[in-house]
Amino acid sequence: MKLLEVKNLYTQFNTDAGVVKAVDGVSFSVEAGKTIGIVGESGSGKSVTAMSVIRLLDYPGEVKSGEVFYKGKDLTKASEAEMRAIRGNEISVIFQEPMTSLNPVFTIKSQLNEAIILHQKISVKEATEISLNMLKSVKIENAEEVLDYYPHQLSGGMRQRVMIAMSLACKPDILIADEPTTALDVIIQAEILKLMNDLRTDLNTSIIFISHDLGVVSQMADDVIVMINGRVVEQSPIKQLFDNPIHPYTRSLISSFLRTDIDTKVEDYVPLDEYANVTDKYDFKNFEENRMADADWVEVDPGHFVAVNLKK
Ligand SMILES: Nc1ncnc2c1ncn2[C@@H]1O[C@H](COP(=O)(O)OP(=O)(O)O)[C@@H](O)[C@H]1O
Ligand SMILES: [Mg+2]
Image 1 (spheres, rainbow, N blue to C red):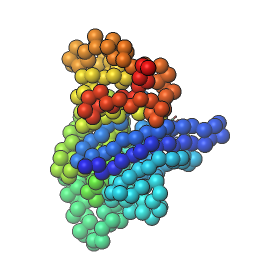
Image 2 (tube, rainbow, N blue to C red):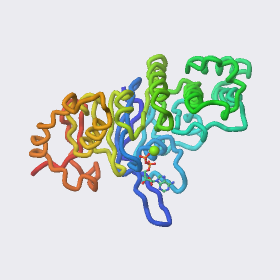
Image 3 (cartoon, rainbow, N blue to C red):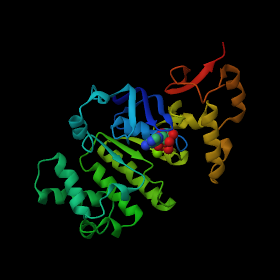
């Protein structure tokens, strides 16, 4: 079942230096209980896509056109009051650097309680009970003590756990995780990814998982969309993407990932000699400039789509 459907989204920033077309015709959907990964290099429009969905764009960003259907409602047309009710409650977000989302002058308890009480009419005592359980569920061992800590008393990994607890406190339908582990070292990163996967199974939350790191995305996502220059060039179940990447940009992402991953051999994933067949069929000229809407969007395998120019 489609929980969220983004259709032909265009978002731009009108700056003094000119118009930045940050998201340039992006479409994808989020299935109930599934994780969709968004991968692409820095500046490709991943965060702006996510912020457009929940309408938290930085000034002077603006959604120019497109639709974001959530439970039958187009969020691009929802009122600010409707969006406030959805944010944190039905769709919540975790960012790369939790220090920017946690308030340094309040304790963890007061921030968790506030997030809970904002959406549920319950007493402080009941909220504290939920907060405590949330900290335990994100595997914080001395949870009673941590409730009274201020953010600076926690390590980066602990802060990210608190953020995950906070974002899941209201059992959202959709969690948007924007580079949630990029600021953490690899061991802590692996723990946080496992935690998110476990919580997803327990709570049946759909996740939009954003990362520039294909390796991280591959551990989390069921399906993945590949972005470059504000456009989607390929969408696929994660395994197919590795087995049969079609778009030149996807291939370069995969081979640069494999080069840095010492445990993986290229032959394990990519049938390199099949590349030639693909370029006989499709033309990728100007693929960085082509809008998805202009490209021929081909389904190469069930659920595996690629933006190409068909050879006429
Ligand atoms: N506040 C802003 N003002 C102007 N341009 C912006 C702003 N935020 C993002 N952009 C531009 O939008 C594009 C996409 O950015 P972003 O979505 O943050 O990339 P990613 O998350 O993939 O690294 C980039 O070219 C970036 O410079
Ligand atoms: Mg980003």
